[in-house]
Length: 373
Ligand code: SF4
Image (cartoon, rainbow, N blue to C red; front, side, top):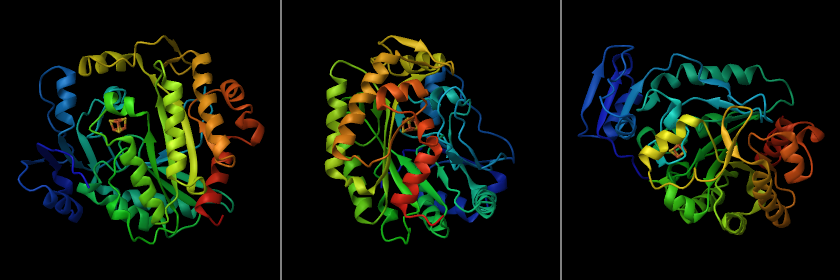
């Protein structure tokens, strides 16, 4: 388990006596800790935003979250949404991908861990479970505003969430990561209610754009390990980044993945191409001047984000879809934030024709995670 490198820790006084705070602080002795008055946030150092972001990745803030922990994923109405829910464990990430949307998303650059998750957050989940109708499924992820496992060596959170989710039969927890922080998942009675998911990319993109993240082979080895512990897994080809030769290299990744992990244990594979808000480009280029990810041509999508031209997106998706389906015809493959027209062109059908994307994914979760709904 690789611990993130930290230089400074801030703690909101209202959580300083929590046993989870004490536990986290005990794992990082010797790092200066400042206790802030309740509600006060760390002072952002003066300087250009790229430098502030770098500071934030080495600064931890243990605090209280005042909003809702459990909520719908902020999909865009313009694209086919998958009906995912978020369990908001924290925000910020110690890894450093050049394309990371979080660089432009928050004005709070530090790594936040929400200490009141244990009372308020789990309470919200319990209420949601109690309100479920027969047949209803919830797909819940913690990796929307952070990497689900990057801070786990400090927080030891995932082990406890896995056990918590094992109590029920109608929802799955998806831990989405690029790390290999899986050691604490061994030996748990998870009842297949947790899906451990990896974002994957070509070795070239991993090496040039996914700074501080383990390589593709290490991620696949970790996936194979959790499968040997009985967990279902998932993979996300996201963002798919175009460069000359990309199509062949993404195909090779798909083949390697399906040779490493048995398709019967894979709940779903998603495909999504690079998309970004205009402001991200300036931030990313100032932090990673050698990145080539913005050198293609982009169009403005219905959500205001830049994305590749439709023909290019379709061609990237179609090739990956074909190779995955050739090896694993029954595997659930879906597109992230794309229109029904792109689905039709890339996959030959629209999710609407199959009852909608949420239904397709619920079905996959029920089948592979063996839910009782
Ligand atoms: S792992 Fe995910 S959250 Fe972390 S820097 Fe990369 S893209 Fe951002």
